[in-house]
Image (cartoon, rainbow over all chains, first blue to last red):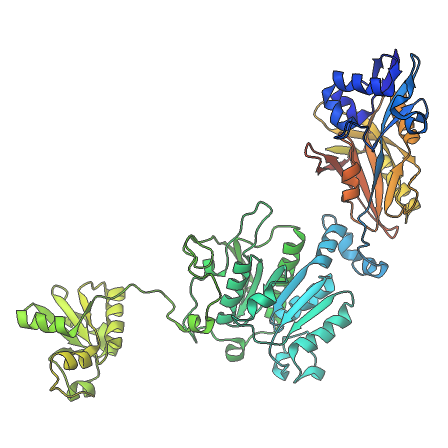
Length: 476
Length: 142
């Protein structure tokens, strides 16, 4: 009987037997006998055509059967046949880093758990930084220094002397120049191994998707609500993570929005946190409200940190969490945030499937209001004719009342909450003004603060009543 | 889980550095515990027999392979796998590694960066012929 030596990796298919005895004949007979006795061996020894696999070597003694008579090589009783797997491999074909880059990124590469792998991901990554100001400056500097291979910068502004108190990517020589170009000069001087793309333009609904589409990660460092919602919606529509940072007075905020983890779960976005913007003018910008220069330095650096974590997969990102830094008290808090089913971009029933007009969106009322109970002038006249019991309140100013009135009790809008005692809680109450706007405000205030439920707004105000019911009265 | 004796780890690192900028290669010997934990007790460094670009490829000659199997028998060890280096590349398997990989074997990859920075990671094929990482434990035998 001849002996076949099974290589260690294939022994699990031969009941852990290292040496098998086979009948004399040819190598083909031996292979047939082996695969008959151990069917699982077959796919490791033979290709689809039944030939011996190219990465399996069969040796008779110390000779490759390719140098003998291939599968027709004779097998005698004292033959020792070795099945030898080809052992080979190699590195990826493309060289990753030059010597200079390896030297530059050495302090990253030697971090356990970061290493070449993470550095490689940084080099391949494309990050779009929106805004190169207070937040963008440190974020850009650190992302460029870290070796993010491609960085896009969106900013329409020019460098102003008052920027230099915090926008550390610029210098006095660049005052008056476009920010994106000034930033490019500084970043190229810092890291010549990266690519920079400049967008010296206002980001808006018509160019955002086109600019975003080539990037892996969006870093939002904008200073206004319309752009923030625009960036969020564009990132969500394109399925890209949005690393968000903002500053307000002495407070900084950071989060990672729309981040899809390795299990395919996508985290919340800006609209899950803030479904609607604050009323215009409530939150002042840096230009209006001022900012301590070091605060965006801190927060923009944290933003760069989260961008690097999103790219490399190292650590736990802020996805699903919202970080707040209070510079005055030196306190940090991290809140958990969740996706909302009513998110208009990616909730259960999305209503926003393309970018909208964000200026208009942010100029609208902050909170979606439930409709008021209304009454038309004709219906009011019907009540009067039928003798329905109700109270009529006029919330206009006294001088308007003097011009014309329809017998309502005068309680000017500004005094409504001080005069709730004069407003009936039992009967129906019809509230009117000139055109219906102030009376609606009065009703909301009375409903929200005092719990009234019996209030009706006269649609179109006293002007509508004059038109519909008493055209002889004075219009103003 | 794979436990590499520090002396053995050092031998692999030295081989990787001395062979730089070419890829080094060799065999891993040791024992497999009942719970699947592998103890690497020794290595056998062999020549990279690749004809051509040894900086990006390695190949082990069949005769060296047969020697390694015999070496394992002689010492009553199991031939547990292969190590090789990735000069200036991360210690993660390339597609070249995956295509040629054998079942059962642990593939320890040593990343050498300009002869300086070294990371070792170990990989093993799963049933779908994809590499899964094996946790390396450094262990000092007393």
